Length: 494
Image 1 (cartoon, rainbow, N blue to C red):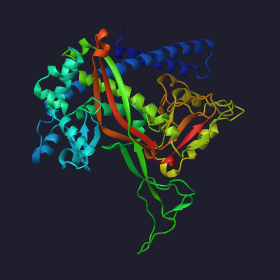
Image 2 (cartoon, helix red, strand yellow):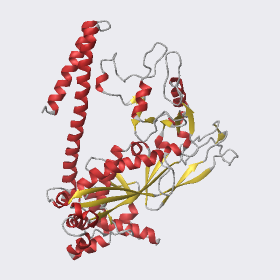
Image 3 (cartoon, helix red, strand yellow):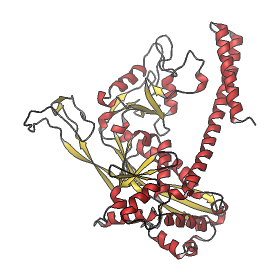
Image 4 (cartoon, helix red, strand yellow):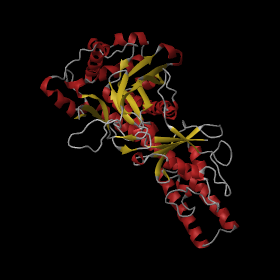
């Protein structure tokens, strides 16, 4: 079987052959040349698909090895009993960072993840019972002995019935885990492991990459907002909408400023925290294998599935007690018609402009202050239809970036549309149904907030899958999301 490098070399050969064929012809290809072109371009595309799959597997294998080594490294473990004046130094030595009153965790992929406020690790215990519980559990779960006991529990569960796993642990391990037990019977995932999960979720989730993420230790995130203006705000002409992009606003004033009727109105925005779960079943032999880093497996594979569940909720969640409100259902977002020459579809012809100018209208409907940092989110099949929109001469209006003629088509799609990054998600609706919301454009970071409760817990199931010699592992995440500034984005509807 060809190696990855051999496949890359073969792809380079096809590229040279295609370029040579185009250079030799100097004109539209004849039938024989076109047949040869089709063969080579087909093989090049097949190779590119294989290379992408091989590269993805290689990256996953490499990531697992790096993550496994990182989690096992003694230097990244917080000593048990960290307290007093040396606590901050101990945390920093173990890979924790303190910036702007928040605590960040360095991860194996080089990304720092915001976890919780500095007070959780270094401040006084709060009087509020729920906050005190959050502080206590976090402080306990961050210690190295808790992490070791957590892994031992998972491995032991694969060897004995679940009800006996705890009793098989040492007394000090049982005590450590009991301090990380949540009300539903699950155990708090060690925060360093949680950071690895969140870092990888952000890599794979479209909305986590684009939206604003705010950590919270409560069940509801309360956020300040500027309420939409009807005409002016702070003396700035608006024409309606959110003039300022955050809770800080400004205006020109005299030496003795006074309030005016046009001052922007402020409000509070609440995002309730929902509960998300991802689960897997692993063979007992896999979990019990001492050569397998089961925590690294949980972080890597749990993040992949968590990213998918999150994207569904953050894109089209209905805001019910079980789901966040997705951006497509955000209150107050303006919708723009993008229906084409065929009803309820993205389409046009040389004689009917259809969707093409409507996409431009959608793009330019976003206020100027949000264009810097704007992006598209669309289903991949809808992007393909946009790529096929033509002008009056039958030429594609949005061809691949950097493309010279059609020679570079085999290299894959570009990462932009009309100069703005484009992200694909299968949770964006497709066309063919009236009123489907098929296009999203704007500054999602200024529009959507993800509220992240800084605790992930796990449940290990043994008896349920005993007949198949498997262990069930469930990760529970507490997270919410909603649109706080509807003026920063627009939605295209067919």
